[in-house]
Length: 468
Image (cartoon, rainbow, N blue to C red):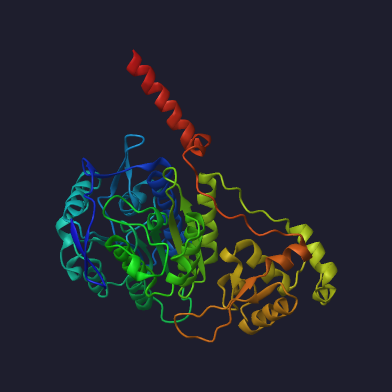
């Protein structure tokens, strides 16, 4: 398969896709299989909140936009099973959630974009087989004549995004799931079209990043990045990979930090750190969730959001599936130490009341991914609608060392001040450690999970049947 890689218009040869029936064939119980489970858990949770929930009869307009939909089904080589891919989970939510849970998904729009002809043909067959009530011809037709709220596009990403400008998406989640990475130009194009003011809610991104490929390569069609900045020493494959990374970051600033002789592990961490920081120019919270499909391979699913509770819930769901312990700092002990150190915050409080300074600090510690905040954070305004009071409390926390300035610009060139937790001070003053870094579930650890135990039992049963 040949593709023109934008914006550099370089001809790229990609390894042919494999299929099992209509399902795209991939390996990794701790990679693709687990990734599908995380997406399948997140979509219903996200929709129930953004649609207004039961109180509003789920009537707010919402959209799930899959920008690399594939076929909707995935064949997992390691287990020999076919499961729903992310596009399949989106359709299942739209079509079957109403019957199973007696809720109205009528205002939920599903947009599936796939430029590969073979994948797209498989997608249509999967839809016809699994969700026969979906009117395929209507989903492919003019948007103005489509009353199904399901839209299928066999088009390039740029072409589909242009078509989507005519569609009212409401609260929307955009899932970028390319074979390796998405260009920064595309990320910015969608973000700019959706967010007119700093950290506007109603838009979330999920971005797939095959982190280890940049340093391990993949077959003959993708070379590892070079270990130096001297372009004269790069071979053609390395040069092409550097151009791809330029597209990923939207420039060349990354090169001085990544094109070094450091260990692969160090460079993977640096690449992820630089990329998440780049995404922080558009989003308050960026949560990278690591996956380890096999030995040295690492990829990340990156959730970008301006909504604290959604990120926290997603992190919890991921942690429960990957043997990461939940973050449970001791609120009572920390508060006792805080009031001892800062008795002035107790003035004019009665009963069980707590100061605004404490409420803000604890929310940032406990609930804010990356320990970041600003005075407009949604959860702050739930306690105190007055933004100026929130800012004053934040400045007090900064004066005591709990918060420091987060020196990063934003996409709107706004003078908005951003802050992050100084964990050294928090640990010293309150006895609270930062959350542990998320670790991926390894193939070896998989057997310890509930899913792993089921697979082991199934494996033993198959072996017993084959012997008999």
